[in-house]
Image 1: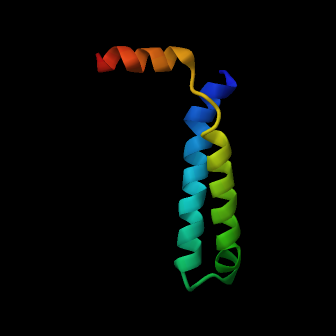
Image 2: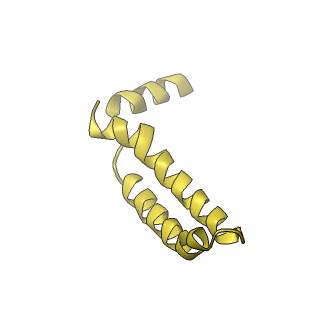
Length: 70
């Protein structure tokens, strides 16, 4: 598995889930630990998402996507 495929399959969705988890952690009133680190989780997820979206996708997948659109 190449870095690009690993990025597309695991890292991009993982960073999105981390942002969502951070927002949920900020909004919940029961656990002080989650509330305390909710903003940190959101920011780390945002930075990770910004980095992972800069990695280009595989040329094979892009070519297949363009072929399907025709």
